[in-house]
Length: 400
Image (cartoon, helix red, strand yellow):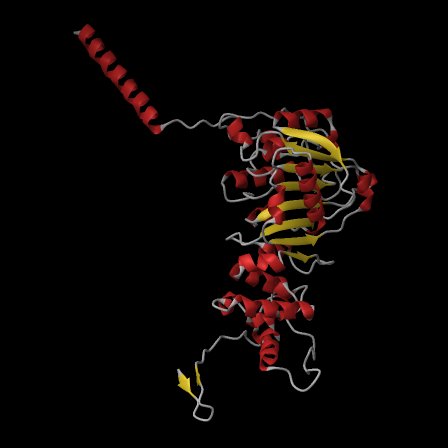
């Protein structure tokens, strides 16, 4: 502790590392990709002067702390009382300089208290300023301090970006849209998610490291999808609701039969061009009012949630019928286990797009992978060895 002889006060000092000068930074515009769509700085001159005289020391300290949000981190708020942190957040709201960067810090350090005043955060940029993988990294939480609701236009994807979606461990809702294909080029001419992409997701889900919290999936104008995706959706352990619009093959009788075979109940709905978070809230209220089985959509209203949308929705596809598929098996019961512990292994013909002209369609086959008890397996092996010895003994005796 230090002692000030002039004032008689005892004080302590702590040195906190400050962000490097802008000229020495790397990343997006030398600011970091976190600031591609938001600013870390308070507005110039914001509340610099009080209505009567100078501001309080508390207010001046607040302006110094929030003048550049890049200098703040999780460690700075460890041990800071919630009342002080709440005051700083209210100042960010008043200055219209809230940011996802600061929201994530508060969601991690003050999860219970912050849930009462700022449970949700919306980031909906109008233009793409960096790769989709960067956006996905920004909304991810390995410790699942918050849930993520994601809406994306597939046109913004770069190679392998579709598989990068699996790297969002806290993903709760996912909506993917595409522009309508050009008529002169045929129905498969647009950029679209394919069966291969869904298969890749299912393989990652089976490892237990991806899509563990995904409750709702919406695919719009994905013209390359076929009825075979229902086999892959079995691998998503928490998926309860699947909405499809504008995928020609998924309106067919074969698709409805395949959906029923894998435990999905179809019905027609109209989301009225709603954002994904509105769809989730509407469906949750509707299912609860109808006293249907718990589809766990209401859990989004209990915790912290980031809603991110990089989406250009084409209203021309709103004329297509929306089909709502709901899982019929009880919540918390994986459809894989209800099929006797089978794990899906899709036929290799699905590695190619079945909708490709001239490609012979082959029926999907599902093979079960059964795991035997190790003790039982060893017992069977010992019996085989015993029979071999008996056979060898009597065989040699016969020869003698």
